[in-house]
Every structure is written in C-alpha cells, then in structure tokens.
Length: 378
Image 1 (cartoon, rainbow, N blue to C red):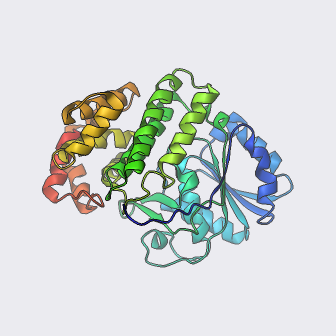
Image 2: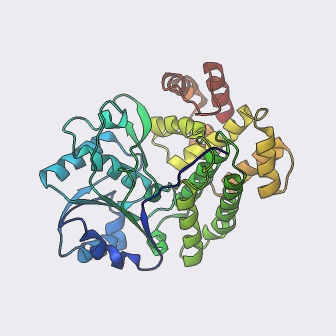
C-alpha cells in the first residue's frame, strides 16, 4: 500500500429536512450570497422558494442557467456577478454540473481574466470564496470532493481541475427527498456515474485490498438499491441509499492506499459529451465496456474478481457482458449507435480522441488503441 493522508473538510448534512440548518451555517460566512442553479426545475419543485425563505435575512444575488455539461462562459459570467456584488458565500443548488461550476467560480472571483486560465493551471489562485452545495441529483460526488469538470467549446476541451483544500465545499446538504423529482432516466445516469467512479479507483495504481472491497460493496449497493428505485422514484430509503453511495464513490474512500485512480474511461466519455452534449453517465456506460475489452488481458485478474464478487461469473468476457446487461437494465446506452450517432461520425470522434489525447493515468492509450477502443464503442 502507498502512504496516504486522509483529509476531507466537508461538513455533510444528510437526511430529511437538513436544509433547516442552512441559515445558521451560512451566517458564519457573511451576509451576501450568490445562489447559482440550473434551469427551472428547482422553481417547479418548490425548492427555490424554500431556499429563498430560509435566506430571507441575507442579501441574495442569483445566477441561473448552468448547463448539464457546464461551460466556461457561465463560470466567467457568474464570477463577474459575484465580484460586482462582493459576495461572502456561494450556494450551489443542483447536481455535479452546478457544484463543479461553483468550485471554479469561487476561485475565479479573485481573477479578472478568463477562468479557463484557472482550469488549465496557467495561473495559480490562492484564494477561494466559501461554497455550500445543496444536492438535487445523486451522481458525481462533487458535494464531498475538491474537483470539477468544465468544458470549453472554443478550444473543444473538457477537462478536470481541483485546488484542494480551497476547492472543497465548506458544507453540503443532502436530503434524499430533494431527488424525488429526478426522472428514472437521469436517476439511472447518476447511478452509472457512481459505478464508473468506483471502477476508476479500482483500476488505479497501487495495492489496497480494503479500498477495492469498498468499491465492490459500493457497486453492489448501487445495484441492489438502484434497480428497485427506478420503479419507486419516491421511495425515501432507496433514494437515501443511492445518494450516500454517490457521495462515497468519489470522496476519497475508494482510492486510499493507491497512488491515483485511472480516469481513462472519463477521458473517453468527455469527448462524447463535448461533441454531442451527451449526459455524463450515458457517455460512461458506452465507454466502460469498450475500455475493459481493450485492457482485458492486462487487467484479467481484476476484472474476474469483479465478476465473481458482483455477478457470480468467473471469466473476463462474462463479467464485461454482465456490466453491459446492467447498464441496459438501467436503460443506458452501451454503444455510440444507441445514442443515434451514425457510424459516419467515426472519423470526427477519432480526431478528437487523438487531438485531446484521451488517456488514463495508469492504463495508457496510443493512437492505435484510441482508434481500436472507438471501434469497440460503436
């Protein structure tokens, strides 16, 4: 095992009606708040009105319209509003896209230039406004980690960034009832993301058996709670189990004792989201089976362990097939064509796989392998 230090400073409020803690928590940081969120879903559900009532004693300015695959233009625009209003605290309401954007905004407040300079580490920001997250979509785990993913349509890049400890949320509020309005399809995409995050750690660099067992247990939990949840969207206990699994999948628990996770599958999926605005979880269910096939010889033992522990099968091919069946049971795509993308787009996708050097931190691709994995994704 590698040496490691566990540090996660996020104060996590989990359970029914935890938003009641919001005013007292916010008061620790000041009176001026930037509230950021996506489209109109929080207004339709009544959550927006509830938050505004809870914050009635604060000065609140808003930025609405964060996209499901967040873009740097929104980060820059929201940071400008925050600077102009000299906010003390940012509150992000939504899923990973809103929370990821807020992490970059919190640092971009201190930089007058393009926030893409922060994302690409061209400039180092040494300050960050405090951030709260109110989670409405269980998926990315962004509520309890220091990392963000944002895309730039001008440069055609979608990349990750983090600046721990500054980019951790200070506090996160997770009430499973706030996810009741999420459709079965987007609930499933979120569950696919949790599985993918767990697997990225599992296939990381290093020997850490307990962390690997956490991965297996978390994937089992997603399967056991997730399948019935898709038919019982207002079941509190199932929503709670899935929400907790999403947080645990990417708060460091799965990779302790390893040098780092791999992230090769996310690298592939990011190109599909960039080109086709595909939901993140859907891009991962297309990429993971192909990725496991391309690395099946080198990773045979690890893949077989997953098969035995999760699906009760004992070969590489059977294990990959079981993951495909699982994703199909979640009504997620497993081939690019399932998304309605024609084979004639092959060369375009291949170009961006090569241009953006899609790769893992551990299990590497050369250009030939980038083409081969794309063939498997079709």
